Length: 342
Length: 138
Image 1 (spheres, rainbow over the protein chains, first blue to last red):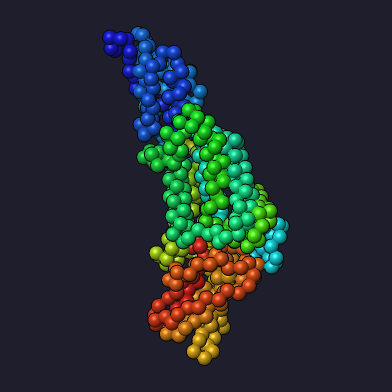
Image 2 (spheres, rainbow over the protein chains, first blue to last red; image 1 turned 120 degrees about the vertical axis):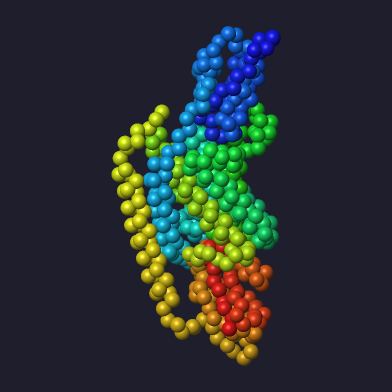
């Protein structure tokens, strides 16, 4: 449209969910010989493309470029955004049932399964199993569920999940050894605990609302690696699906979960790097079966129809857990009276 | 990509039926168990010797008893007993006293509580906040 033959078009992008998609689209489009630059926008789900396309119709260009993209497609008109409220009709009761079963599990005293006055690696393993089924599930399990569902929805399947768990187990081993060696009073202060758990609760809330996929504005809330970090470090979207899950998995060592804290306290008291590392390793291994099951459930759901219901159920559940955690962390700080007493 | 609206409502109805059933069952179990716990008004975990009162609380999978009455304006020794405790209740905080400790997996932890005003309440929680106990001063 200009003298130099450079035209600018704005196309709608179908299937753009996350910031990683933005990078991917821009990178793929700029590789096209006729494209000079591409600027994608997540909130509007559109991309501005500058290039020399000659006398083609916008529809033709969109079609050509769509064929060039690996995961997305472009169109000249906005695809009608469908909100599947009917899926919520099934998802809400599923989430309520899961939450009720969770309460039942606590009520029946899953914690009573652990007995014995000496801590062995076997104890650590059993405590891990119990932890993954108990109140910790509201924090760590909720996080696992939200992360894995997010990855599954963006088409990223097995690898990020596996890396999350590998990162988690590895960090428990390494950091367990570290605190055993230091033997110092490694403990987060109540304010730090609060900030940590409240932040996690807010993140989970944002992810949960996103998974519901009924509020378009929620896309802006989707937590992700800051754009400049992912762009700079690798120049590709690879980072967000490899390093990030492993780091998040590793960071769960610091998540405020009572069982984890009890185990860390024991690891500190041993004053030995080897014992500390092995204790935390066995604890992490004990949590693995349930957490892995949670994260790979997202992968088992294949059909489009089931996925909608599944992600909405997970979203609801994650939101419930987030609210539960947020209220609990406020109570733990002494700001409000305890609301839940399981 | 328009979805057929004539899709049957069966899954929705089924899911709600299951949800209602599960919630009812869980609520019944929880209420029955809480009733059992609340049974017996005689308070056995408090004793007064000389000018000092002692309150005993067991930490395991939560705190027991959940609510305790204590005398106001009397120094108090709070004894928290643990036995094979690896859950959150072993990570105790009493915000009002600025108290925060990791209880040993098994053993007894003593917290000295200064005299409290009548009508005040002391709340102890696990670090995540989902287990708690209260001591009310009269």
